[in-house]
Image 1 (cartoon, rainbow, N blue to C red):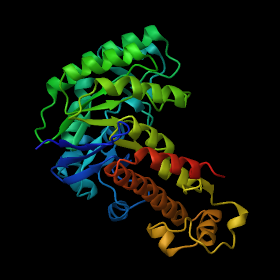
Image 2 (image 1 turned 90 degrees about the vertical axis):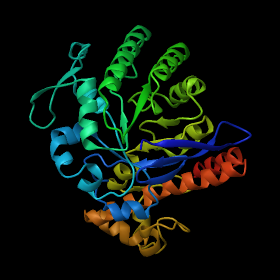
Image 3 (image 1 turned 180 degrees about the vertical axis):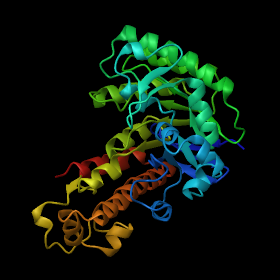
Image 4 (image 1 turned 135 degrees about the horizontal axis):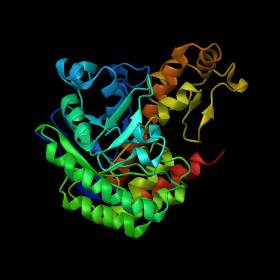
Length: 372
């Protein structure tokens, strides 16, 4: 079957939604955070460790898996679930974000698709809407994403309008060739910080009747928080209540809270593992830098009261030692902590929505997070 979204409750004081997503690999609750497993692995962690963090859906990257090992190899191995030994739902992105970052100029973006060179060996490649869907069909993820143009934050109004219209044509082309009966397909809303473009993109994308909808163009370099929140505000009112709403590439705790308040259901980002590799950890009073000398003999856990494997078993002093001598176990421990932190945040958000107290929870969290 394809996924099924069930809206269970909306907080009476805002647009925050409580729901479930039924998949062939179990039912997950929303709002939720999805860890990113770019190359069919959440960087440095085993599937068991990711599952122990409370993870539901995880995300894999179409572009990277297309180049290595190739979608045919993954398909021969039984699809992504068997290939990476993940017995839970998987979402694959379209590869668009990666190829647009590799395209050198606007001439590389044509009606046919995007021309670019491989980041591995410089081979000239073309990714089209049809090819993106074909790859994702073979990867056999539970949720596939339409191939969209990812315009830069600096794009002007005229460029964004033309880009949206092309993305809609690409979405229709991709939908026509999507042929995996067990895989949902999501459409993507673009439009920058412009209310009329967001409305147009949302309304026209919804007309194509996708299984869920994503808000794109909110995690670009150079984009302000204000523009991100505008993009959500201008998109959500035109998305159906009975379909999943996905905010792409967002993993900052406060941004998750802001997204939930506006009616977003799922989030993903590489942030928790990326900052972990640089020695940073999320805590309820903000991010801390574990390489700081003040932790050299600190016997307390990374965060008091945290139920993750790292905090239950190791001290700040030990984690700092690992990081200072470049032992990879230090980054692994912080990756576990940071993923668990964001998933725990969404667990608490769900409880708050159940009790119609999400706005109070958000206020309390932000006040404490910004207290240092």
